[in-house]
Image 1 (cartoon, rainbow, N blue to C red):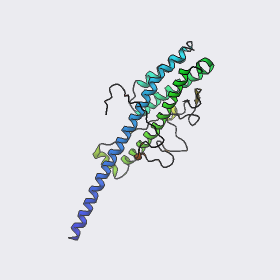
Image 2 (cartoon, one colour):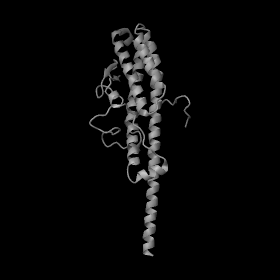
Image 3 (spheres, rainbow, N blue to C red):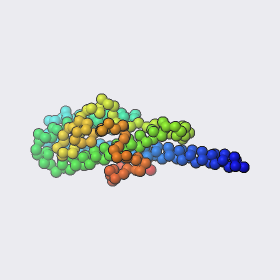
Image 4 (cartoon, helix red, strand yellow):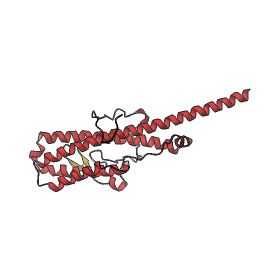
Length: 242
């Protein structure tokens, strides 16, 4: 009788552990998807602001057509879609570089810098860039937690049963990470390299692994106090509402 009870306890424990592991994997996958939707919304917001910025600059510096066209071309490439988060990060990085060159050009036009509409667009872009950077850190943290579960024993066994696979970080290839990135923080449209000035895509500091945050960040606790979701709710064309 005692042996039977022990066997039943072992079986019950295994079942509980299996259910817990399965549910944990599903929760981690859902957190990754939620984090990605937040990034997607902010990127669309950024794309929507750029045409207004370009038109405002054109009113004062129409002969800077090459720089303006480069921004719109990079925007079109970023909006065209990417096969994975890494490719999207590279496309968005190219857009950041084009914006950085545009805002550097505006330094030669005091009247443009004094324009209230231009200043407001810069402010909105700066806030959007900050939210994208926060969203990227949170997304990478959730991906890191999910990938750890998928690769670890014994949760990797349940990952196969649940159909949960590894996800890709939202960061560019190493070569792309070394490219200059835009810095709205000074309000003058300067360009900064990784780790300088603003928060660039794919920035990793202090020897941290991809997606790792300082201070023992726990992705399972949600966006946290350092992330402020955008009030807008627009989505990309064709995306179904929740």
